[in-house]
Image (cartoon, rainbow, N blue to C red; front, side, top):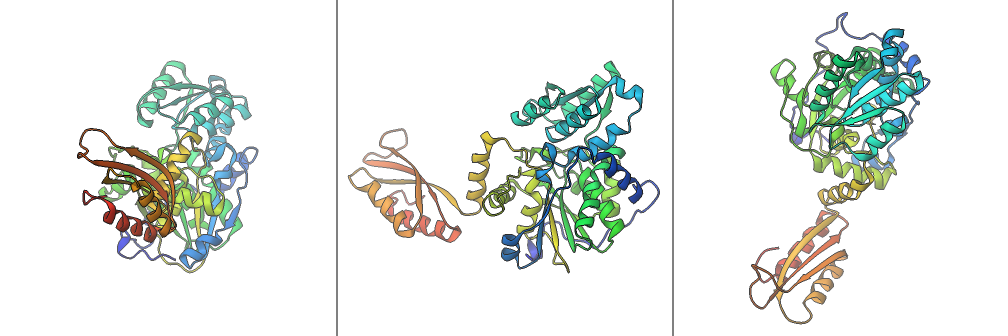
Length: 423
């Protein structure tokens, strides 16, 4: 496996089983929750990652929760939580807030149980997630810049309507239901060496880690946050739940800025380390999963694989399982996501070259790229415009490449052609 080494920006620590008390969820409660979720939740496959095993030299497996109903793990927790509502709560209906995946889980669970559901989603929530949530029968209300605004709006709606609020992660019943993934994983592979799980609100990682550690304490559990919203990394550093100011990230599914005391307690008790990955690393993983595993996974769902290839997962004895937590990605964005991932992996590059305004320059560039073995996919030829020296032409082009070495060869070739001295 890729060694953590100096690339590990969060310094892996030993097992942090510091808090095991009666406030933490039990394995019996997790098993009961899995039974409640069973009418809706699928048993998702645990598949060998042959390509990634060859690339890392280790035994890699993929827990394909992207193939779950509604496209993510969220339905596990939602079905458990809604099944436990009493008659009065069911009559009043439920309200939730989500960037998309929790929304779909709540909507499907509510429709299955005959409960009215209203879901508040940020204005920028991906359209396919909004459409899917409505298709499951929920009323969707859009508003606010982020998940925090949607939560605030949902809480106001709860006060006005009396509906039961279903929090996306700060809820014991949600946490216990999501823990069913860890229970299922251990049923499929009784002794994993390590399990790598994305962290947003943290319910999936915290709950699954509780199941895994209670059944196989020697398994190393690694949580992975988006660097742009690393709330639990900040919380661990502070020793208490600590909000962060999130930056923009493509990983909207794990862009959570407000930690939960409940989740934090479980992460502290059962998760060995929490590391971070950036958008380039996640989009590279998305492209790799699509190309080599034939899995369509959203950036947040690919965070675990991104951590593996960033050298943030330790060497262990036994298989390493990477949880692919969701596959709800907007098809209008997938081309941009894949292109960004290919660029980060050295598989795609864009160039601007300034050449003399004489015949044959475009052919000269094309020939140089062809000799290196790359493929030109886009060309723009500009002879006039502000900033262009008289007698020159700017040629912009994009290429597909095999790897970073080939990209470096093109850079060197273009420096010899470019009359400005820069590419």
